[in-house]
View 1: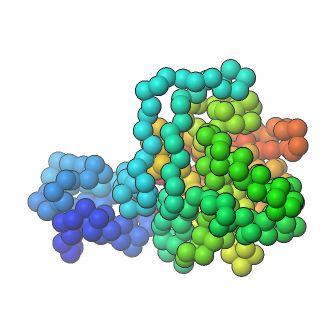
View 2 (view 1 turned 180 degrees about the vertical axis):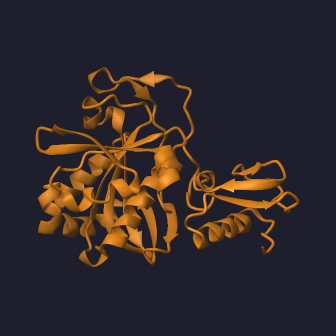
Length: 282
């Protein structure tokens, strides 16, 4: 085994490469005298006569992929939410590039950056007015109406809107929300740090099974890295969205039940942190 670099980033990239070369490897064992970075990363543990790095622990370390500080638990106590669903005061949303990771099995690097209204409106308008997207989103509206739509999202502290990109080229729009104060919070026992998402791929050229799997994995990975307190990611896709639902089991999403929103019949999906990091290939 070659010697890992001593700097923290180089060491993490070295570990990432070892796990990528052995997709079924649950833990990487190193000689006990392996030279570690000056500030040893928390994912390195001491075994009886060697060092051990669990894949699930390594993938929850934000250093390589998260481009802002993880959210911290606030000390402000609970604030009022809809229908009496009190919730923690939400931290301020990040800006700019928030996540980037290469997915070798899909041959693409997935990144997310926060929505910029002036930069992204024309593209968002084109995507929403594609009949394929409009069938599920029902937002095939004028540019002015969609500007108002995005402005509402950007000013809502329970929502984080991001643009998804493949190899730096924008391909889709995603909303990450705190479930307890969302409309979904009324349909299950939402925890204070549960988060959900909505998403669309606007560029037809970006469709395909492997790439769809990559962005779902990337978005779920980002949500868990962004907030260490989040142990559950939820979703509520339309029950007839068969193309999306077929990815559920392999990506650790479980169908809990079907229920009716006023505007659609949905499937309640749950993805638990431990299940995601122990089962899903990243």
